Image (tube, rainbow, N blue to C red; front, side, top):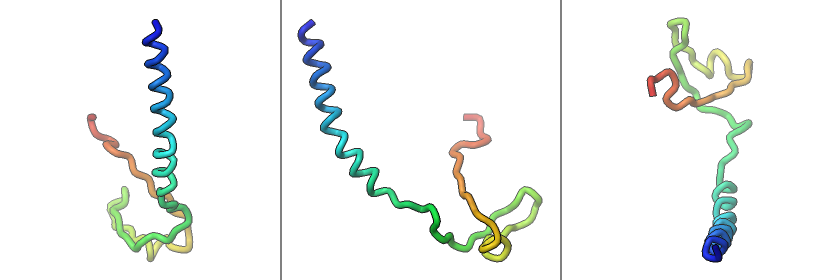
Amino acid sequence: MRSKKYLWLWLFLFALLLLPLSEAKAQKKVDLVGRDTLNFTLPSTHDRIITYAEEYYGKHHLVITFFPAAYTPV
C-alpha cells in the first residue's frame, strides 16, 4: 500500500517537471491569424479553377481548414 502512494507521488512530481517544457513549446507556435496569404489556385466543386488573388483577395474573408483523412474509409 505504501509503495502505491510513492508511485503516485513520483508520477505527480514527474508531471510537474514536464509542465514547463510543454508551455515553452506552446509559446513557439506562430500565430497565423490576420496574416496575408500567398497567391494560390484550387479546383472548385463547380468544375472550374479559382484563383484567390483575382477573385477573393480584399473582397471576402478567407478561412483555411485541414481535415486529415476526410472522406476516406479510415
